Length: 185
Image 1: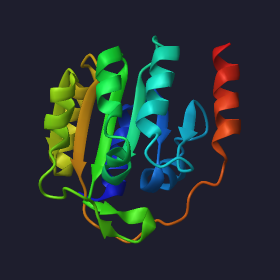
Image 2: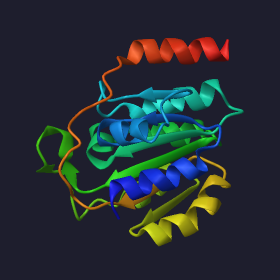
Image 3: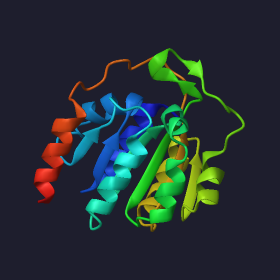
Image 4: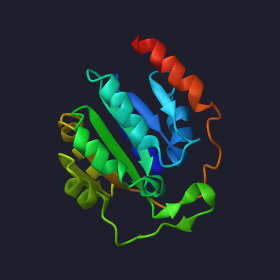
């Protein structure tokens, strides 16, 4: 599956979810019109999208939070899975785009590629459910169940390796968080 196909599918199911996107998911999410409101681009802090999403899920328990994370980004703070599971936000949906690369920094293969199973790690950490999908059809079929499940849940989306996008939305994180804070107070 291509990243854009997964992004398009997520757009259909976003509804009023708060979203956090990092690295290679940030620009396609923005291009799909999904970063206009209730969204934070976490491209300035690789590895922190999961934790940022956790804070939003805890701060707005009546809203679902979709975290669009990368495999390389998650590896940088793999321990965040334990923290997320320990706090157990029922409104937390963690989507991992898995291509086996640190794509943003030059397409280096990630440690543990072909060995690490993020679904098993998430479940062992205490996530309620986890899915692994590798085709658009499989993802579309699973999305209704995913979005109706009680979180925290993790979805590993196997995507094709591709070049770029190497551009990022370019809006610093601090003003985005300030705008979200104003919406919730």
